[in-house]
Image 1 (cartoon, rainbow, N blue to C red):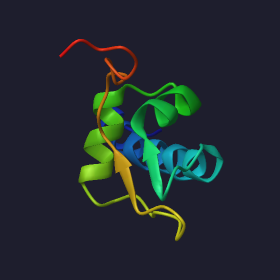
Image 2 (tube, rainbow, N blue to C red):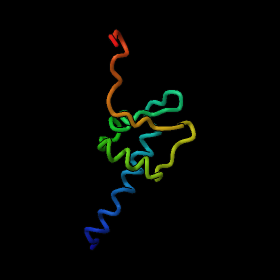
Image 3 (cartoon, rainbow, N blue to C red):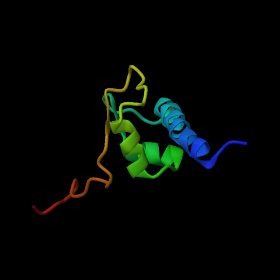
Length: 82
């Protein structure tokens, strides 16, 4: 029987595979993918997605240049009074 430690060590690989599959399905805008789209596709916490992306363990498809890690929607695009 697998120990708890071994079982937990497998989780990051599963998360990486989920993100890599999601990268093939999410919208790409000018080579950029939003972390929010990855979050919606995978239901993984955004912090976990960001950590895995920053650890260089994710294989990026050739059509993706980068992932935008900004977590909140941009505000003030229309009619902002700055």
